[in-house]
Image (cartoon, rainbow, N blue to C red; front, side, top):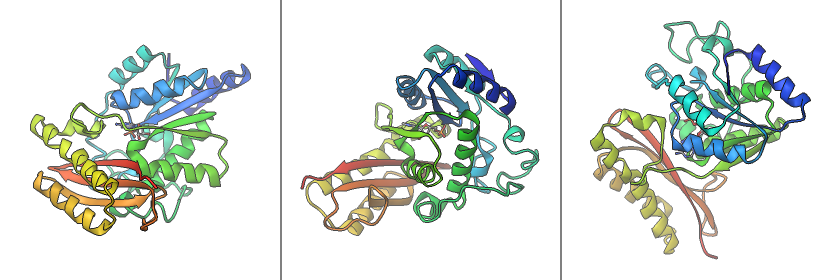
Length: 293
Ligand code: AMP
């Protein structure tokens, strides 16, 4: 397995793979890998001959006051896990390699950005996560677009945990004609139902138990929808209360069509999305469900 830090070296290695006619699969991550990430890599490996995983904590997608500075960086352990899985290439660039001159040491993430060109996907980027984290999806789409241009993958795998992110990526890939097939992987959970996340490391042992209530709340909304309830605002309000009782500060909990439009009484393919604070940690989760017609 090669661990590469520069775009120049990555391009040389990718060119050699392309010349050899090898199909390339790609999983972008921010590192601090857990079983969720690793399952994405395993899925990607079944689809191509060369597996590339990137590890880059992208300052462009963090807002002021968010956790960019404290986001866990565990490159050594991450590369060890990827090696064990049989990954071929790890691309772990520095911030300066990705955004030359844009983010100077000591500046707040997102503030000093001088990137003139960005990938903006209006509409879908402005609701739910995007409403709570303005600019977040522009940061995500821009870095993913840059990484696609560097890695030139045939396919890339993203997790359904970041449901809205997946839609944003599919949208710009389609509209801007990136020649990359986008695949998704279901949410990987802890035994108690908590969706795996690098941010779970911020939780103490007690909070980790408490955090299971986020998934339980989504499940209880899903059950009520399955039993025919269609008063979406009422269900959302009940869910907010349930989360508050479990010690969360809910940011949003919303029932949407799978394209994130507002559901009607005819809607059958739904997704319930939630974001909530547990102490200083912001967790997100979602459940997709199909109602019987
Ligand atoms: P991150 O490192 O958090 O940016 O995540 C990298 C990729 O892994 C994204 O496509 C995430 O959606 C995906 N991912 C993170 N956690 C999970 C999980 N628990 N289950 C499935 N995919 C995940």
